[in-house]
Image 1 (cartoon, rainbow, N blue to C red):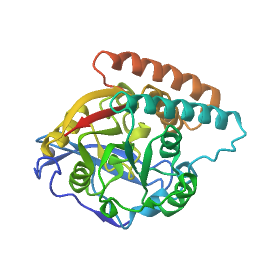
Image 2 (image 1 turned 135 degrees about the vertical axis):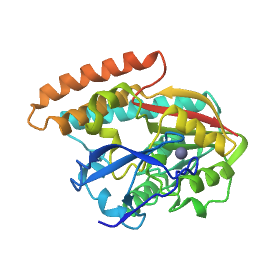
Image 3 (image 1 turned 90 degrees about the vertical axis):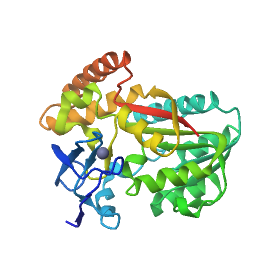
Length: 295
Ligand SMILES: [Zn+2]
């Protein structure tokens, strides 16, 4: 294992961390990783972690290869329905801030979201560091997809990061660059898991959205706001992603009770997802949250 140690908290620079829990990579390596918490600002991160150069192999898994459009099983169909629903839902969320314009999707994967937005009349640009999905996205939108943020110099009305920021090694650098790419009245949408959600508390080290070692950062509302404030950005709204509670609960059931039947997993995950959303609704502490951010 090629691990690197974070010595300073990227939020507050403190050097004192406590061990929070140990989580296992159930999808790829079966290796375990320590999750630590900064004693000063309570930011939570995977530490030590694979370096940017070494992390590639942890993405070599079927679960990280995007589903094709030709899925035939019932689960594939459910997945595609949920995906289409989510695409339209994200579009509506963007439309509340901007009627039209230029959009950059950071970590665009195979380009589902930018393709959807392009069809809705937006000028779209994508960035995707992994070669395979980048080529697919490029083919889909018939345009170049950038391989890194550093190559991009334009500015955008909307920048989206759908479950991306938790994967980025140079956290502060990424936020600084993204801020420089958004227009003065533009909007940034950042979706990340919420380790203070009720499903995270129920499943603890089995909570699928710890997703070590791919998830380097584990945000709460407090630490995300802290990160944005640090860079002169403002969180103007927080919107729950309710479907994520079901999906994350289903994966967590699988990790915690591998012997359980498929039906039992689905029933328990549905119950847990429902409970998590219900408990979360009072204080917006859902499984995953979208932060809507302005300069
Ligand atoms: Zn800190």
